Every structure is written in structure tokens, then in C-alpha cells.
Image (cartoon, rainbow, N blue to C red; front, side, top):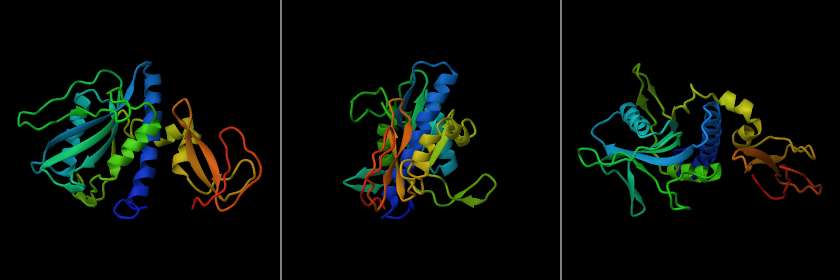
Length: 252
């Protein structure tokens, strides 16, 4: 699945969004527990400013700095160099960053910069019509997927040492950065959830032993993923219990 492919980008966005949602939710719970914080939110905010010739690295640094100044302790940012207009994506002279971030305290209200450009806003929840944040990682995954499906792709950029390299479509920062919370640590704490979103194929059904499966993620009441299994290209007549299930149908 390639992010640049007009046919595959939707599947790429959906798969990546599930991984982002799992990591964001697991990280939020881990940090909240470590800091003994009883109240935390995962919210959707937008940082926007005029495109005055910013390099990608400088623009990203500015956006993340603004998010932190407004009370976002860390999270994942998606780059948007354009906006939608009549079903098309057009450059309007502004750069936008959709940030799905962890707020361990109050969020500082946004406003207008001196040049009249909106620099920070909290996005209203589409389901609940409020600003409380996401209620589940499933809702978060849907929002991230939508943002990724029209994100900006940086295929070539100059690094600090002058080398050219591709950039990821999702940038992790703050308390959720990889150097703060490693994937290995989250995987050790929640191996089932990690496998559900990172290892979708080639798993063995715990009931019949078949490897002809596709793994699907199911959200528990705790907000974390547990894996379920669906048989591919075959039908099994045995029953499964708990989080496991086997179903017929073509899941290829």
C-alpha cells in the first residue's frame, strides 16, 4: 500500500490510522498512569499559518511549538499544505497541521495572529458536537484516516546534514515521541493490541490452528485493542470463545 498511489492511498491511510490510534491511546494511558493524572483527553486541534517560504522542517517545528504552547503535551501531527474547495485540493497560501494530541491539563484558547491568520483551534467533535475529545481509539482512528487521505506527501526534503530523504506523513512529538515512549515498550505492555494493528496476516487461529487467517482488531472497554481472527477463503464449523472468532468469506 503506497501513500502516493491513487488506488491504494485509502487503504494505506486506514491501516496507518489504526496504528496511530493504538499508539496514541496506549501512550496516553501509560503517561496518565505514570503521572497519576486522573483527567486527560486526546483531542483534535489545527495549527495554521501563512506560507511565507517556510522549509518543511521549520514549518513543522513551528506548528509543534504552537501546539505545545496551547496545552498539547504530545501527539501525532499530519501535514496539510492545502485546503478543500469544491471537492478539489487547492493551495491557499497557508500551511495547516492537524494534530491529534494528548492534553493532560487545560487547553489554552487559540486566536488570530497579528497578520490575521488563525494559528490554533480545537476541532469540534463531529459525533457529540463538543470539544471534550475522542471517546475511543475507534473514533480517533476514523479522524486520523480522514486527515491522512488528503495529507501532504513530502517525498524529498533536506535534512540537517544536507542529505535528501522522504518524510513520514505522521510526526510524533512531545511526550508521545518515539524517544520518550518506545514502540517496544508499548508492545510489551499490550502485545495483543500491537499485533492487531501491525501484524494483520499470517497469524494462527487458536481454535483450529489454521494459518489461513486475517487478524482484525476489536476495541475493549479499556480502550485498547485485542486481536480477533477471521478465516480467509474457508469456512470452519467449530465455535470460538472470548475475543477469538472465525468467519467465512474472502478477506483477501
